[in-house]
Picture (spheres, rainbow, N blue to C red):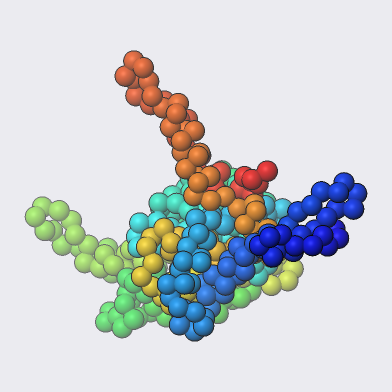
Length: 357
């Protein structure tokens, strides 16, 4: 393009030497505004620190809240994937998957049910081991979507499950011993220490078996005297029976190298997400959800530049269009109820689809 004078308004005009077409270059400030928005959202800066008024900042960046950051396709195969969920006002939960130091996927759901976990896992190649805090429905989702993946129950959460039953200062000798055994889970790092822990726990179960059977009769029903200790024992027994407590030891023996026993990688992500939401407290629920989406997207391995994000990411208008398309086929002339399959497919919002082709 070569310079071709200016328009009446004084705008620089350019001319194509091949076809002779003349045009002006329009300045698109969208990428700059998106970058400013993300800088504010992902930092500790208040709007007052951005050298602009609050009204001006919100006026220039309000359109950014209409964008839905979608997780990119996760094609890389990881040995270990960490999974957990962050709840937002007890009304929605964002399930997050972390591997290799990056966020590899996220999914918005109403609960941590099996179908929600499965929707997240379908987008990620099956790893050798999945680490979780034992969310409901997680094991069923792994069995259905990642049948060859082994589950490692976070040992830190397993110990906390016992602490909730015994408290941090148990009065009974059986509770004191069980709390000590639970605290020793963090020291089980290899096959020898894992076997020693299992032996110690088995001895505790044998030693206090009669004690835990004590009960009284209340209103004609049997009521166990030490129900909280029994609950703690049931939880540990289930983990030992399922073989998910020391999966990392088996992986170390088979493949060598270190394998994680806790969910610290994704718990670190959750703590940073909570810190972001605390710094920007007061956001409505939908904005909180999108804030989590933005944080997750910007912490993927290769986030797109701001201009490309604007071009490919779906907006609220795209979502409304999908709802309208789904709703157009719902009506039944004969008054019959809606048929299955007429609703919106929420997986559309978690796929790297270029909606603006």
